[in-house]
Length: 257
Ligand SMILES: [Zn+2]
Ligand SMILES: [Zn+2]
Image: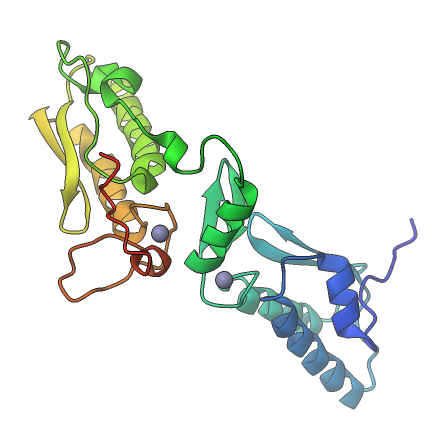
């Protein structure tokens, strides 16, 4: 099989733009610097640069593929480039975690994430994550509420509903796995407290503890309005739960309730 050389080391920036396509303006300068450093180092040792056959984003991370076994120093240099890039927004280069929208992973800061949502859902009838609301726990997880509970709507922003669904599913499963009867854990209220989600119970069992801790931790990092993870703003009174972007918009995170 013949491999193409995806990166021309004499024209790195153009190669990167061609290989990665649009939407990677935050990564390209970092990769360019890393590859140029590598090229100069190898030149000093009279070694030709590696043949990079593919460079792409996968699950929010940069991957670099070469055509053969590279010297350890070269593989390490390429891994370093990936590590460096894989903590930053692909569009602007700010620090960023991987965001998941409808199961699609993409590494964006809160500003680029909200721009991405605008582009993606422009003109759509329902927008992410607004479309997740209303979220009725009694309907989705009937075994985690009192048998006579007809409806349990969480008093939290829609940005937390993905995490809520994920960890209640985990809790539901933990009860089943422990072979405890349905209704062993009965949640009666879900609200915001101390800048994260807070569950109250009619009936509690320690089997729920781990999922509850994970849920509290996740929501301490996630914007309660837009669902962005990893850029929660600290304001003076520590009262709200918004990301840097949403806090500049003057939104009331609980206005939809
Ligand atoms: Zn960004
Ligand atoms: Zn936000």
